[in-house]
Length: 434
Image (cartoon, rainbow, N blue to C red; front, side, top):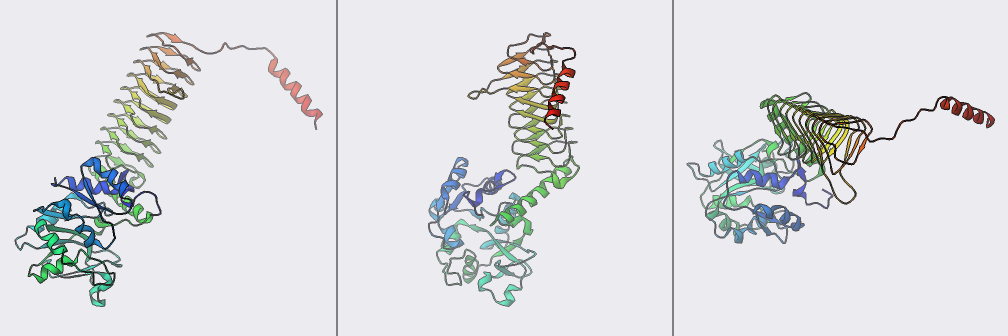
């Protein structure tokens, strides 16, 4: 990855890919989840410990079998089903995990279940040789496969389901007499076969088990996730004018009859209610957009922004930690930070809530039905009463009572003929310099 950030913590849709996987696992309500770490483990431990996830360390990188073996003590003699997953394979769904466990408890009671897939390019994946019923005849790593075995298109994703009472006994018998000198996890399949116990393979789409080992592969997996999320949004009743240009976060919530125009980006923590419109080139993160509200184009909603029903922010409006009440609007060129705007208020172009003095943040309150004229600066902390009006170009530093008109600007003066005299003087001076 050429990065200071651990590979499995690189984000997909705004969430580290390892946490995508842990979230999918949590839907199965596991008794415990153990993450095997290696280099850069401090970053991984910090990311997963708040979730109650255990970690163990693989000091030497001696193969997948060796990695799984490090969890033996943490499993504490666990008797039950074990899923083996990979932190850099983040898109495996809870449904696929459940299928693996279901197959483990099939009538033929396989010793292990392997998740297989058929990639467009088999490259150097290990191969799974199986009969027509999905019983595994042989599994072999690409480096050790014969030309005939390499011709098989069914590949091993590395993901497995095994019974706890079997797994570590089988792992203890795995050797490293192979081309890489590593302890391969898939060897437990053939070791079980030596004991007269067959294993089974089930298949999934190659996209679901796509791994990430580079920035390019990260982008491919991100695109795959986004494609699926866009499809879901439309299936649930939203209109995406140009779906391929809309980017969702892992937790974006979109209501029915929402219209999303091209080139919209959603960061984490966004909820968009029914009937809202998000116009093009808007950036929305950590915000709540109410029913039939309107955002953009070219608007930015930052964390803590809340828009009430039928509220509107237009082009080049930014909101941060601010509430825009029902029907209130800020149509263009405005910054609303640490503010509360009442229902039906109208915020004129170029208005700024001056919320920061270089040390502390302060709050601005604008009452219902208030009108803020263009190019006004509201210096917080300040309250504009309900129904009050602020004249254009004002700098408001004190509270304005309800229904009052506040004017805070220099007196205008007009000096007849002064502009003409100025032009004549300057033109004459310019002429002498030619």
